[in-house]
Length: 541
Image (tube, rainbow, N blue to C red; front, top):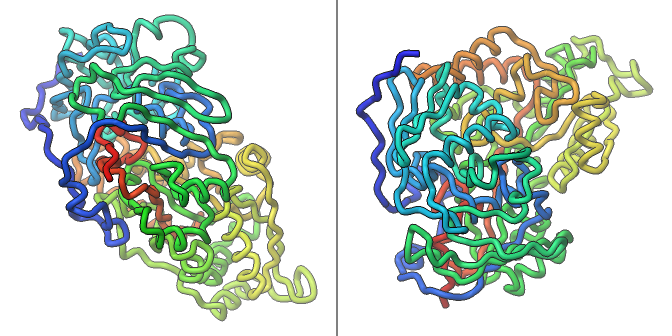
């Protein structure tokens, strides 16, 4: 393979401060400028609340949400990302991408040591990329085109690809693609390595203990490369499974940082009024959440576009936002979350709330009243994701669709049964889901609409069974397109097909917040928020 010429437009990154410019109004309320400008204070114990308890403490072979929240405290990535998803240095200090998109060259940070004292080198990067390619749920796709990782010296790593992967430069955060010590992962399976649960990394915190069912304790790394960080002496991650107990712990100040709004929706406004708390909306650009209603297109009635349009007309999205989600979301017209600014299309057509139009469409489809019962047109089984938002959305849909003669039966279950019912048993007609776009549409969105990803038993995939050859072409073209303008256009055309074909109905981009003790500063400085390393967090007065 001929070595590609490296593009001179290398992104040489410094230590520039991160800002909030350009964020949508719903996300623009960060910490007060005065707090951000205050001088950090050393010392103290910082407590983070997460739920559920993570299955493992390192994400080299896992992508569980709670594991994502803890992994980066110990193991770092090549890059981090600002709120606009622009890359920033971490273990790599400079990088360049070849003009043909087939070669990524990283200059690595010097003087970095693993927590056991061994030096960090390019060999660790090469080995970690290989493990991610083999074991990581998303990394298997992200790094599938990496033919080799060259290490011409200890501080240079060159990823050589067989085809372009334009989103790869955004996939290198600590939580998504951690760099782990080769000397601990040289043998055995990465997904069964003991170091996953007693990690050793290069990060600001050193793992001390994991008390199952209670907490994980980390201590300050005194030899961290980014001195004088970290500022706190100890980091404790607590697990509180009961929602009411989580709200109480937050309100009493027993925990300092609680990511992902881990309280009942009805408690949010009450907690907002507490003078000791701040609701931070940033830090959810990297992993974001979209609420949607997915159709099972194996149901003959739902194969008729008019029936899907009728159901869309029967949904008052404003009511869903205000009543179901307590106003905690932004209505969006299509499958792309507005955090992905380059790809978001705000003016896609939306089926307006119109019960008369819904009834007319069902009549035209031959589903007249009385067909399925005294006043019924159709009976449908609805499976919601087993959380508060999913259940409340399901209850709204049951009431709303009854107005147009569609009877909905809600089938609630635990999470494992929910996944099996949707993706293995295919025992549903409507599916209320919450899915993440992640940091790029090829990673987070293609899986939901690509016909080749309709595979029985594959979770969080094309659950509708949707198939459109032109959509497949657009997704496959965007997955390898190195020209940003052409890639953006492909995703724009893709979105227009989706809102026209209606394999699902996008409801809203869910607002996620970190509920923070007002004394804690410097905790949300990157697109992954509390899932970042918290090296800059400190406790004031």
